Amino acid sequence: MNFGTIRLGRSSISSLKLGIVGMANVGKSSTFNLLSDHNVPSENFPFCTIEPNIAMVKIKDERFEKLLEIYNPES
Image (tube, rainbow, N blue to C red; front, side, top):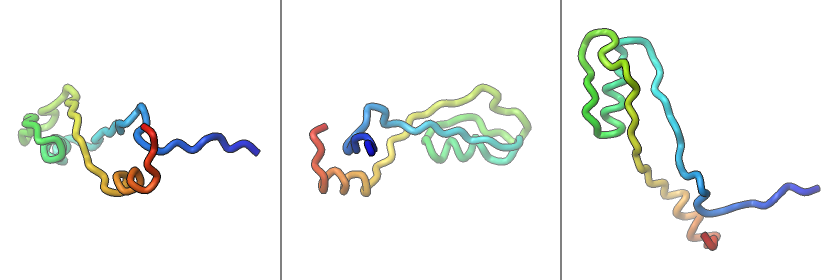
């Protein structure tokens, strides 16, 4: 049986795409502002933000760093 190779370390695709979905006036823009430290309008009327907003947020994961220390990959 060939299970392929196990790759450790940082992959070439190191991003996660996430969307916030919900009904109008439930706090999607406020949540986006908290997570991304942006200032997207979040007024108290339906459909205040119609255009999608995009942010890139770096999240440090200590578990991943520990795995890098243990296995010491080349890349």
